[in-house]
Length: 158
Image 1 (tube, rainbow, N blue to C red):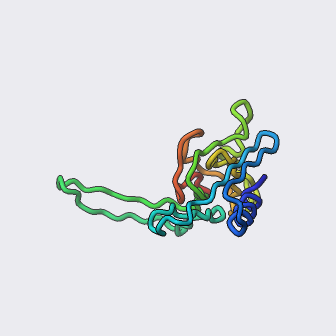
Image 2: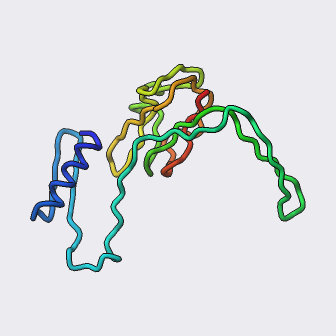
Image 3: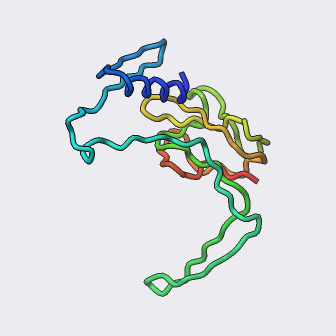
């Protein structure tokens, strides 16, 4: 079951009088429970709608900026050329479909927009992340099985 199907089920439950739904299909399990309608709006948890995987673009040229920190030491920031595949949601990043299987991609692999580059697990749902950019994987920025936030840079693509 993919994320679009889960969203569709959530919409159906929201529009109906059903208060709870528990769905189990193979290894996949989904439990939805409506918030109490009598709670004030401020007490309700925010609804999160994860966007598609995004690509952060950095200009093709490199630049330096220098500034002085509190201790008087100079810090140099450098932007590296390329594009980044970023996490479309909060969750746990996995580089391979299973611990005993090879990574979806590794440094040096050529990818296109539809290449599945990793999985981000969110609420026990494994979400495949597509590159949405073409190029060569220059750097893997996150270790497998580590948490990521929305917008975390996962891969640098050149």
